[in-house]
Image (cartoon, rainbow, N blue to C red; front, side, top):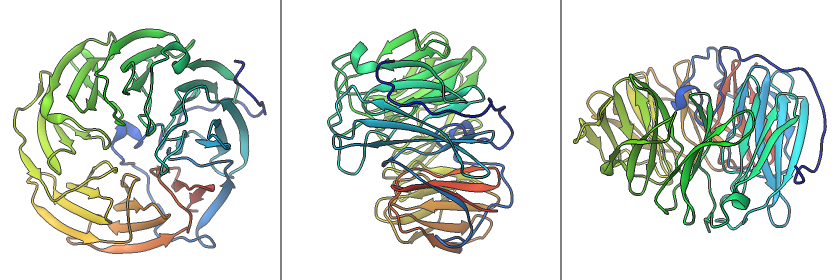
Length: 398
């Protein structure tokens, strides 16, 4: 706790409601929401419900549970001042702001920063992991529940270009992915005290992927990609069930959709998946559907990708047949998200291209430019689009 620098206080605990966006890429990590009446057009002076200044940069995404929006930032000359903030989702009022002193290395590519991992939240509060290896749990009122310096526990943890894998909640545990060039692992932590329930060694390889969670007859599995392949782990014990060597990756994350897994390999490839693992060969591979940093999106029978050159690609989800490939203002690091018949593509300069998912071809509904750099994937919740930039958190919509 000696690393907790400030305390500010607030309201009563909230209860999770329908329409939450609790983790990276939202419910079930698909990038898809059931929200309705989402906005199409906005600017700095139009269509913004509220804007809240942030104390530092962040490549992480905002997450929303109940009436709370959580976001992380990093600041300071060494980028070692770590921030966790909570805002009222309706009004934008800052409910609390906590700061931590980073204990690990702050070496990173200039494009990213120490607030690159997206937090995960539930009705009890939020769990924030930073690229320094600092991990903290706060309740919904901002009270520190527990804190761990993972670099203090495992001193060889290192990644010279920065870490970005995000924690997830599964089987009542906090799952912490820690692929790096030092002691590499995936671990399940007790959510009450932050203690290891299990810890499984991983290859000492740099990766920035986030585990997917799926339910099988034997329980809950974690699908975790890395340079050596895609491995399924038992969420209760950490035991490896199977590995699919052709499913490796380092940045974008696949999408589970029923008995299909869409992986960002060979462009995007669709594999059948069952309790025993993945089919040896894909049903199709769309090599033109390039992903770059952004994860693919499966929505309304289509697969969408956005890459670092500004290309948006759409293919048929059943056949892999190319429907269109168009270039817009880019590049993209944020993953596309969708709801209400619309797909949102946020580029690195803060311009968001909204397309009509119901149209047969490529139909742009609007291009909305906030004029502020943005790497974090938007959150769709409470009838709004929540966007984080290098300067502020925006709630767009009524």
